[in-house]
Image 1: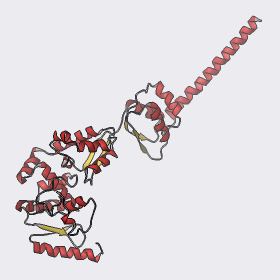
Image 2 (image 1 turned 180 degrees about the vertical axis):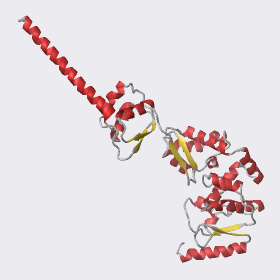
Image 3 (image 1 turned 60 degrees about the horizontal axis):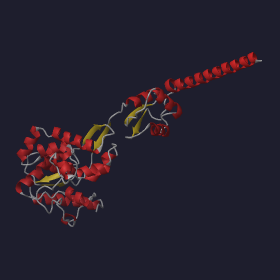
Image 4 (image 1 turned 90 degrees about the horizontal axis):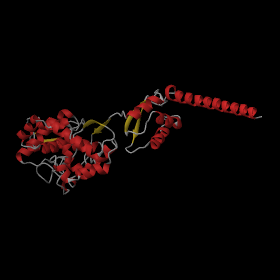
Length: 347
């Protein structure tokens, strides 16, 4: 009786081991198939994965599930433990369709993030710049704006909250997505120092301008010129005006004061009290009216030498300008342009 019971227990134990090994084999096989054979299917050849700073594995699994990068988050969690994927590296990752889940796991485990390209273009105000950058990096827009408003922080680079836009230039820059506000500002300060070589500084001094003043004038030239080849000639006009103490009377500075595009400026617009109103105030405004492009800065540093003091848009709406030496000549050009506006019912 005892022997029969013993044989029965042995059979049960043997069956349990067989079932366990079978289940283990199936599970291991499923895991291996999931990791090394199953491909990530994406609607596009590549997709961007952003993992915020402070993300833990459960949150990462939720991100992978919500973006449909992983077909079975349970198996991915098991694989993560198997490969000792304990620390989640935040950042921007580029994932290719057709990868195996192991390739994805290995990429995330090693933290092999890809830089992102931050584009700074068509920016006129500090809050606008902060918002634009924050949409491209993890950096917080309010933190960025706070640094741009911090006098003591900006003083280390010779800027103030008023003229801080002179520290930036229109361009495309590579950053890691996890860059914070302070690292962004420090990188931009380095870019500024790198751009302003001894040769460029010498050209600015020869014009009687500081590097910040060059950036201010460049921002106006940039706003005036629809065609880049006209920038040196427009820069020459404004430098001629500065040289004789004539107000710049630059329409883009009024647009800046209005904080909106106004196709036709009225006399009332030019009477708005503001330090940026170059109709009321002689000399340069206190700060750039936009983040200047390197090409605009070069135009100011290398202006066209000519006798022109006036210019206005051509009546053919080509985006080019008619330049004039005298006010009488300029007035004729302006009348032609205003007549063209009226004919097109542009008010």
